Length: 279
Ligand code: HPA
Image (tube, rainbow, N blue to C red):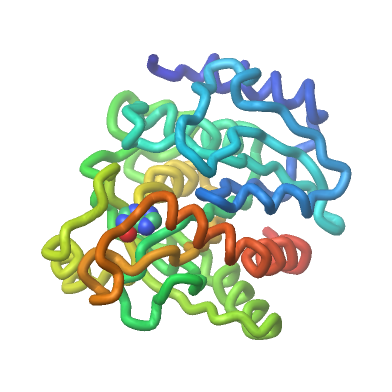
């Protein structure tokens, strides 16, 4: 199914009816195993994806498929707990539907989080990596096809895809909280198979620090709509062939690892939302 502007407006009206029409200060898309973040929201209201028109039910373990509206300190926050992946067979316009809704709602700030495999030596399971830039290896681009001028420029600029001020505030907060966090380049693939060791060696030589199956299409779409972005990867496994002690990559372990780091991840992210300078 192809999403039209009417579909997006229809979804927005539905959410505004549930949550009120005041535009949130910030939207957050949560990655696998990070759904516990929504427990931190104050005054939370929620709606399940299957009730939102045009939202397919998410099919991946670790994804709850619920949209929340609540506050964190003084900030109004919209949270998508669960995302639609390209590897599930969805078109890019479904993958990016939550971001499109945010853009039409005039939300200026977006946080995208994900679970990723660590390529760079120091990015061991349990580390946090703020995304400094990305490499698009999905083989697709969400802006391909007819362009709607309401969304912005077809030839979207990606020079500063990830907001530098957002990133440095994240790094400073992590330091304050005693967390091990760095910055790095995220390489987005389609999946759903994990990579071969040869692919990871190639990605490493191209400058990738971590690899994952999401985020890139959402970020491209959000930049087209002029949003400021913070990207945060939770490293849940060594990328293929990086560690002799990890014989294979197991999706269940990926979820367990993200849940075991959930507490520090949630603390960092909620503090970031409360204290960052928003534009
Ligand atoms: N590769 C791709 N996607 C991932 C990985 C990985 O190693 N870990 C979590 N998501």
